Image 1 (cartoon, rainbow, N blue to C red):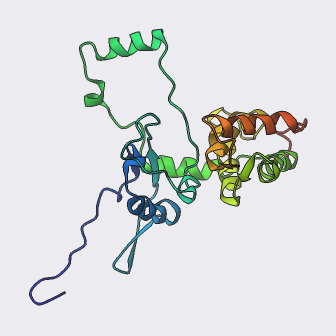
Image 2: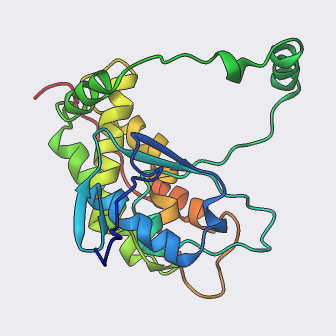
Image 3: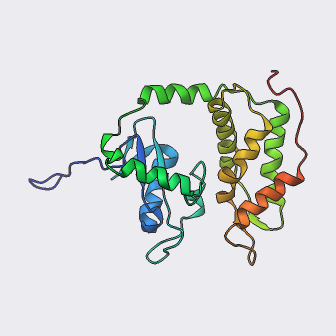
Length: 232
């Protein structure tokens, strides 16, 4: 406060439950770095005062892989905060026709309604933590992680944060599949989207699908455990 003027905090768009950052790689490195605290700690600090973000809180972001002018690469620390990275492939002819039919006479985005509420999401997040993972599957998960740290094609493998993300994603995948236990197929299905964006490839071999290919090679090289994974 100075004289008759004083600073008043005005919460910005980050104070929401779900954040969609469109073409996040167009944000400046300073903006991307500021997002790290929100993504990791779920707090925002302004002028020395930390404010807690309301739960649930998570960030969705898009990147345009084609237009690179005016973009900034996301730092490894920020990439590590995203649970997974998915590629939006081109629509099939059937899907394209369905898209046209949906938008022919209407604008579906204008009639969207809520399908859940925050309390339900919080309850689901707690339920997810109770999904069982067999000790042999835990060892298999860790073996995949450690293989990324010893592979000659990879300069920097998956961090412990990535290990926990892999575990939580597997539990969630099992739950939405109608199971209260994880199976090897869950880990295989999630390895590329959860782990590949966390890798830094060695100089000279980094290409478009290099990270995905090396994860697939690791999966092919490791023995898959065979147990009754539902037995605790």
